[in-house]
Image (cartoon, rainbow, N blue to C red; front, side):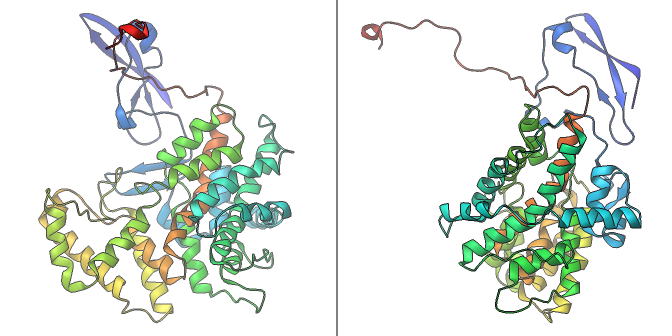
Length: 431
């Protein structure tokens, strides 16, 4: 990072200078931390469209190029050449593991896959028909009541233990939320299996028979985890950072991230996309719904197209499309109604002048719902899968923030537009 250039801001004829900071990639930023002291003014940036809230070395997105980098590595290369725990190691440590480091890290995670037995009883406090994300928010937040032996976050080893615990236990908790919702018994982890296969074992296995993970399906889900591991300063990651800036423990911070992710505009988008495909129902109705999507007076929205950041093809969507084809091929579902419908919808949208002009390309959510449904994951569990994967990014970003010597508790400013100062009248004089 460099700060050699200066930006000059003229207000009421008076010029004030601010340093310009340059990163490895992306837009330069004006350092306005002293703006209030120098000018008595603040900036207004609803939705943080033009504001960098932090310095980070973790993830970079170039929306115009359709590029996503984890620690400098393109997402396409990572998805093709690495498994999810290798990517997890990369995000946390900054470099990909060698053979020994990979083995040691995987064994460390396996040692933390079980949850406290008392925690399993915590689930019985929820209704069976509760949304799994509601259960997830409560259970993950409660982890701090069970694992309070490593809460000195100035200690690197305590941070490592918290990181390993959360990454290891999220698959167990997600699977337990699913089992509880369906009335089936919880499955203990099987540490003879790798991370993703173990998750599928806990999700779909029963005590009655040995579960045998399908390697093609395991690899597909592992790629889904990799594609969702981190995504720069999105809403849930910013939530985790803001919660963590107060010194809150990481379990509470991740619970806050899960709550934010639950929103349909964020982690719930793939669920909404699948519901849209079900509503359209058949290829013959695609034209009708494309027309509705272009009608500004129609409330129908084409879910799974366009992205707040990407103004080109979401690189994760290309990978997800291939994963979708692989999974459906393995299961003999090449002629799946929803997949054929999605392909036709994608084809028309990419050729239609309206969508091309507005750069409404398919995003990662467009195919991920179809893949997860084919894997046997219920729609209401989609966001839980997202949270499982994104916990890696959240914890990486949390640790980066609290080890940053410049970090302060988050405190956004506001533009107050309420009533001006006024005095309270006695009750009898109030109109």
